[in-house]
Each structure stands twice: as structure tokens, then as C-alpha cells.
Image (cartoon, rainbow, N blue to C red; front, side, top):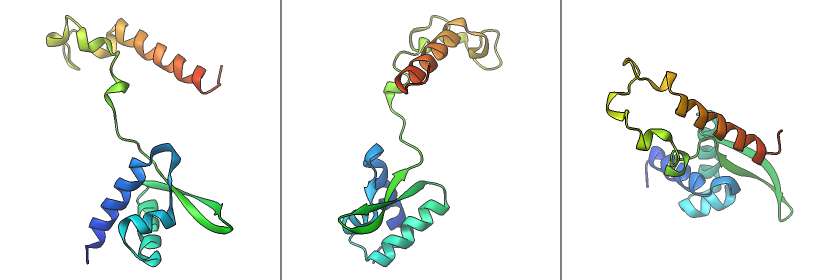
Length: 125
């Protein structure tokens, strides 16, 4: 029988891989080949550790929980247009140097554009 930490790790992996759709707690048990009792305990433990959130849902006439990850894995898409990737000052740039991301106009503008795009896509204007 796998150790509880291993099951928690596998469960978190399954939940994260389902992304924004989440996964039903009952589906999770089946994917882990665990009992409903083990599945419930794992879900509660992950929620207690603030790694997932659970939302109550009526599914096929029965109440269950849909599990969502609190954090999503980072992707290259999040930094693909960053001005730092092609900056000529890259070698001299650093937190304690004279050239710093804190004072970089290109970085500031990129972050402002990114924030503006997120508010527009979420319907906030």
C-alpha cells in the first residue's frame, strides 16, 4: 500500500493537471485506486494545507466536491514577451546594481500592459 504522502502527491498532481475544470472527488478516488474514505481524507488534508479548494456540487443526484488547485504551474507563456529576454543590459542588470528591474522603464511598461490586458479580459474596465 502506498504511503499517505505519496497518495497526497499523486492526488495533487491529478488535481493540478485538470486545471480550471477541477476534478470531482469521486473521480480522484478512482484515479488513485483509493477508497472513498482515503480520498476524502486526502482531499481534506490538501485543503488544510491550502493547496486546493473544494466546492460542493450536485452531480448525478448526489452531493460531492469538485477539487481545484490553488496554484497553477508556471508556464513560459507568462514571460514570453518579457523585455528582459532580449535586453542588451541583461548582463549588468540586477537587484543591487546600477541597472535594476525596479527602475527599468521597459519592464514597468510591460507590467502595466499585462495588467491592463488581464483587466480587459476579465471584464473589469
